[in-house]
Image (tube, rainbow, N blue to C red; front, side, top):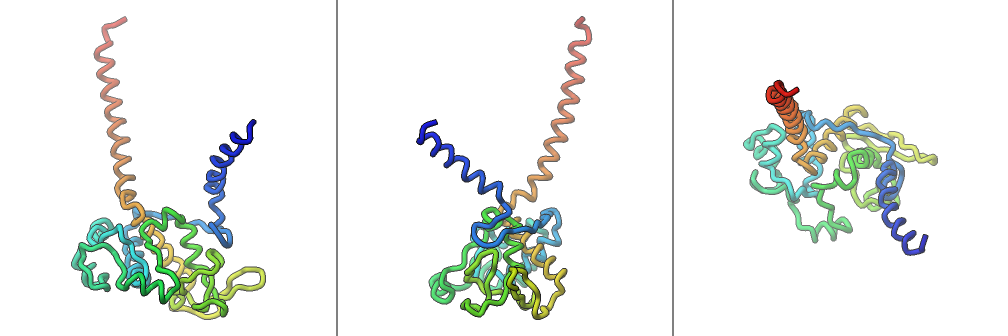
Length: 239
């Protein structure tokens, strides 16, 4: 096998190896958690939307999603969204954009926080869940926290008031040192709902694609049965 062919095959195989090794993040610790996302759970999506607008959208945009589209998809009326979820001075028909200028964000935080519309598709729900639950104290970092899933992260632990603070021991294990407003189970449920919402905004069509697929399969089954009856009728006199 020539060197050129080997190089070509390696370039094709390497991305596949990265995909199948989904348990390891792009940098940092391995992600050994799995989150079952149920986009049919409308209440979870609503709770996730509430957490997103309260804790995320002040810094992170979801620029490909409109508030009105979100409301329609997850069973909220626009008046409710306008009264309880619009904190940036925007209209319910606007996209979910941040309230402050990206240049200010870069100056204050070191870099502008990324848009989160497609983060669940690029990182995966397991990675996001592990990241949001793994902040720990680190006096050497500007915000006093670090994260083993993304070492050197510039994001502050915005959910620490709910979770409490954690420390990492010498073996790399996290343990709680202060209590938050929520119990561990309640906090994990909150993060799971938030991740569910991020999965939804990454591909809103998933909400209807599943039910549409069932309808198509049922149609094909009925059509096949009718086609069989028609074929039998046409061929009943042929021996």
